Image (cartoon, helix red, strand yellow):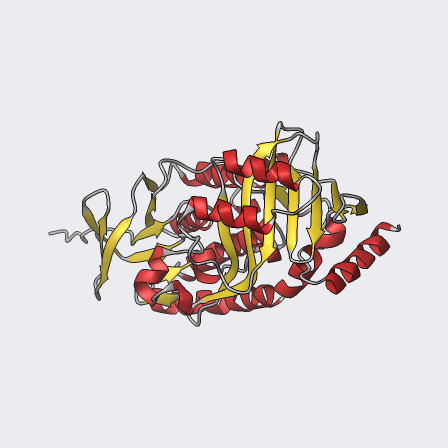
Length: 383
């Protein structure tokens, strides 16, 4: 009698829920799927969000997107900003130079692309392999030794082995698991508003920036488009808590701060009144002692937003997603989360600690600091 050996049943794939489908979320979903996870991404927007202010992809993040196979597409979408012009209060020129002279970027390697182009490339790379739930979000979740029980705002409930918060600077996942944002937010003394407006100056592949102490207005043309990104930044000792969540209060505050400004600022303020895509926020960082708890972990800005002053938030999100998924390849989430922090923490901390230099160059808050900045710019440009 021949004895047959039973065929072992295949082990079920571990399941993961990723909250957020901007940059960190789809990148994490891609790498988790590559490491054998069954991934679901939930996103409160109705679809992948297009548009948005341009972002940088630098350093190790370029290696990450190359391994994802999307680097050629991103190179095709590179904005190629060619000129950065700084202006005095009266609108006269301080200096005009290549942006990399200020940002320290590497010409021919670093990328600057529309945020929507990046999110679309990430989504395209992963959409056939993972489940996306749009127009929905996590309502509640409960951790146990067996998994995380999740209920969704759109109805229904499911259990996942792991849950990841990739839901940005104001992460609801972080608030639910770790506590209020105020515990981890480091305010950097500035607020800003970004929106699109008509390109009445005929700008092309360039940024024009007007400064007075504590106030900045900039127009950013990513190409030869009919629209430009308008940017208004101002120093403020404390965050304007009363304005958060109130779009009209935000507009009123910005208009008050820039009421007597010269150059093209009055035109920018009029465009602000008509804009339907205004994004207003405080310039802040998120600094946490740990990025995980139990079966839940954070990635990208939810874990360690460095602020736009560093120009590295997008790159850190891509790098962090790669390290996190790789650390979980063997399925041990406790050891994996610890390895993730060991791999990414030093880079995050060094990036956050460098923030002072960028703020001083772009947004001087005193007359003396502004003049020192202008002297450096003139020296760089050879004027």
